[in-house]
Structures are given as C-alpha cells and as structure tokens.
Length: 227
Image 1 (tube, rainbow, N blue to C red):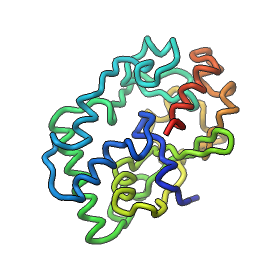
Image 2 (tube, helix red, strand yellow):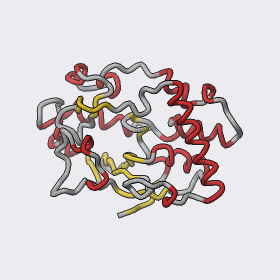
Image 3 (cartoon, helix red, strand yellow):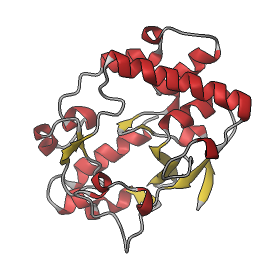
Image 4 (cartoon, one colour):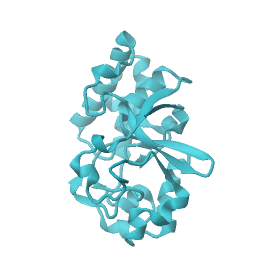
C-alpha cells in the first residue's frame, strides 16, 4: 500500500527525533542546489560534530533505564521489548570524516540523478524496490511519518520540490532484516503495523516488559511531534 505525505509530516532522521526543516540532509541538499560545497562546510558535517550522545537516555531525553544502554543500541519504545545490543545502529549519530564526505557525495549524486532523470525508483535497487518506506505516528488528530528507509531521498525530494507531496510506501515485514526483528514484538500475524498511536503506549513492548513506564514511553514518542 502506498500513499503521499507532506514534507512537514516527516518527524525523524533515522532514530533521531527531528523535523524536516531541521534535518541536516535537507539543509545540505539546499546548500548543494546552490552549488558545490566542501563537505566540512555542510549542515550534515555540523550535525555530526555536534553529537554528544553516549546513552539511549541522551538520545531520547527520557527513560531512566535507558541510561544503561549505549546510544548505538537499536531501540524504539513502540517496537522493542528491550534495546538490541548485539547489533549497533550509528545512522546519523556517529560517522568518520570519510563517511560524512561519502554521505554528502550521495546527496549530490541524488540531486544530479533526479535533475537528469526524475525520481525513478527502479534506479534504487533494494528490498523496498527503491521506494521510501515508513509508518505513521498518531497523537490525537495529529499524524507524523516515521521514515524507516530513504532518509537521503526524502531530504533531497523535499529540497528540490518544495510544496509537493512525497510518494512513500508502508514498511512491511518482508523488508525487515533479522536485526530489525530482534527483541521486537511488533509484528501482528506477520504484518508490520502502519500506525502507532500514543494512546496505546501502555501496550507497547517496552512498557509491558517494564523497561519504561507509560509516561516515559509517551515522552519519547512526543519528541517526534515537537516540530
């Protein structure tokens, strides 16, 4: 199932709660649209060198038990029973100079490709068939879209086509790698949910396991709605 989302609905940069306007990939795309930029002068480079996380508590700003887990552990309150420590996720929270330079080059290449050929999903061969994927977060009447895959593409499309909706698809169980399913109880009859609602926090895996209180889980959830 696919849908179109407004740029303003995007609420994350990987696990980092962040609006699109504050997204350093988006800001870097805007810089590159004005002309070549040395990678150390980009918003993305500034983002990385400003990171001072050491625990999941630092990353989310809530959850006393999260003080005992590295910020690189894989964890979302509505997905995981406990943080995954056998795999690490450093996406947009830690990178070497060389890795940052490659990310900036990737954004530049995306811009050039879309300028020349349009956004053709067939040119992005992956398990999601080149589509941006994710799911909805709901807080009352307000909805956000959590991007699971396609952070760079989302940022570039928003920068190149302001005001236009972005085509996305919902995340599916078949897209998930083994590490994505570890410590997770989110699949329902083999189906990944298309939406997580704040009112259901007491039933989230991390709350039912006792890792987080309902209030702590909702505080983390709320961070994705601050923009």
